[in-house]
Length: 344
Image 1: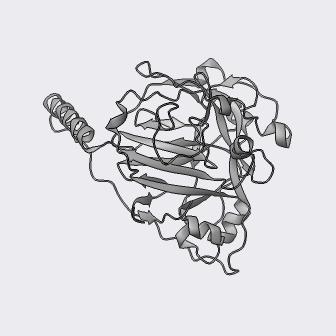
Image 2 (image 1 turned 90 degrees about the horizontal axis):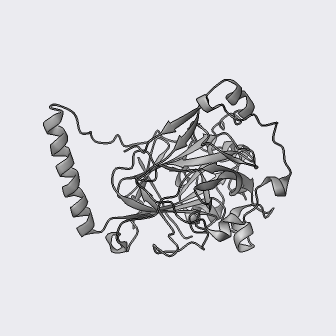
């Protein structure tokens, strides 16, 4: 694998095989009850580690990848909109699989399933910890034991988020492409002159010059869990040998505090997270998603036992007013620069 395997287009990570991943800001849920999907409140900015060799920690240079800024207890979700072909995507939180709760593996496994199936899985908001539910991704510093990594492994060594994509094998891809061709020909007959899509726009704006001061240890962040929400993690219904045995690409995503983001990149961090109560009081939408053609994975027992960050850091939630039924929108399933990899 070369350092051209993963690229940034704007704030979207592009992994080989047509996989697109965006990190989305969102409202943090209460840690009791089960809730609709919170809204996306814009993208987290994403930058290459390689662009800041003088200010990132040496260990980060060795791991390569990208970095993004998160506030203490800020919530996020991963969007896969823009993924153009079937792929299996592993998602690690501190090198613990967010789907199975097992240690990070170099291979795809089916028992338990340790990957997401794209593009059927449109997003992932948290760890697979309940039947038809996930626990929200919430940022916390390493060293407190509150991360998923700390609670599952007893150590906090890695932090961040890890992604690895596996494309379809040659035969399975040929079958899929032929099926897509039949669909496209059918659409062309019923929608004459309709566009079937154009080439992607590649390239990210150049990063600003990093400030002087030299590298030092950064306040690394990891992901713990917050409230529960209704979201399925879909079972793979393809034959296991449809997937390539070798990954198409992988990337290490470092999470940093806003002050460290400013020091490393010279950029202003995003504004602090939106107040949840104000969002709901304004009548703005929450979401519900259901795919009646897909089967939900069983919950991962180890992930179900992970305690929310409030149990570690104390509860700081304002009083919770749930959205009205009219605010919950029901959704159906929708159809740059290279990132250097390193040792991790």
